[in-house]
Every structure is written in structure tokens, then in C-alpha cells.
Image (cartoon, rainbow, N blue to C red; front, top):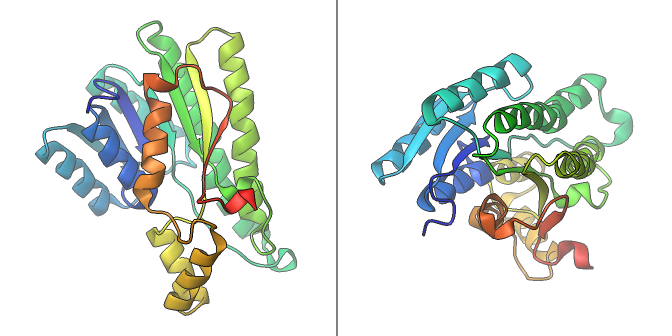
Length: 259
């Protein structure tokens, strides 16, 4: 307990899946957590549960593709908790189709959330963290994917967005280090994790049980991951245990990319 005691953490897409697991774990480990999402009822539930368990949490409605929304969310975080120590850019969507069937509208929508949202969050987190230096030793954790490391025949837009998150994170890490800002930036690359997004994708495209079995078989460890598998990786990068870790990729994929 207490691995991120008294740190202030903002988790986007914190209502469900990886974001929910991360928000709850950071809170259990002592962080004050701001949960943001567009799924308000579920987000409010996460924040209430954290408070009921003795933690501190705030839920805010948040469209990560909107810069004004980022300004408001960061301002509300600082007003409530005094500063920002940790940003977890988790919000994202996933769609797939052959490249010749991809519409520009769908491409831009996915990029606006998966890549623009990471850029905007990183930008405004750095501004907030710089304003409270040296009180804040910041950590920015960007959720990429195994799909940011390897290609997939029908996930071109998703591959591009997550590959962008990977290399953008490295650039940010180098900038922050060279400027002496005391802010680290790292990306996390999950394999397939059993979340509502993955489950809904399978429901739309496959028989759910068969699809789950196929996903399990893709991972040498023999099964897909669980949200806490990723949340514990984020916790490490958010904590001072990783004070010498920046500009790197934490791959948590059951051996998927080792093949």
C-alpha cells in the first residue's frame, strides 16, 4: 500500500476497462484520482466507490479531442487537489476495416481520440506540472498497444494511432529530460485484454466464445489479459519506483510480440 501516496493522478477513459482498473488501483495505492470520461454514470460510480473505500476521487465529463475540455479538466484538478503529478492518457477507441474501405471521416475520428487526445493531454499536463515545479515530479503514461509495435491487416488506422503514441511519447520524454522539467513519459503496450471494447468488437464481428478462444490462442501464455495486468504496469510508471525510467515502452502482452 502507498506506492503513489498523496500523488494526484488524472486518468482519461476511467469509467470502464483499463482506465477503471487503473483509477481504482492508483486510489488503493494512495493517489488522489481524477476520473474523466464521456460515460458519466459509470464514471461517477467509479469515483463514488473510491470515496466509499476511503480514497479521494473526482469525476469530470471529458472529451479528450477537445482542447478547451482539457483546459477545464486540468484547471478543475488543480483547483481541487492543488497540482497534477500523474497523467494516464488511456481514453481510446478501436475500429477495423480494410484500408480501401476506410473512410476519411472514420480515420479522423479515431485519430482525434487516440492520438490528438494524447497530444492535448500531454501538452496541458506539462504546463500544469511545470507550474508546480519542484513540488511535482511528473509522470505521463500513454496507453499505446501491441498494435503500436506490429501491424494488423485490418487495423490500419488503429495501428497508425498507436504507433504515433509510441514515438510521440519518446519525443516528449527527451524534451522533458533535456529541459530538466522533472517529468517522465512512457508508453504502455497491452496485448489483448478482456475489456468491454474487446468484447464488443468480438460481438460485432465473431461468435463471442469462438472469438475469445482465438484471442487466447494468439498469446503464448495461453490467454488474454485482465485489466489489472495493465493497471499494475501503469502503477509502476506512476510511482517513484520508476524514477529512472523514461522514453521507454512497457510491453504487457503475454508474449504476443515475442513470437
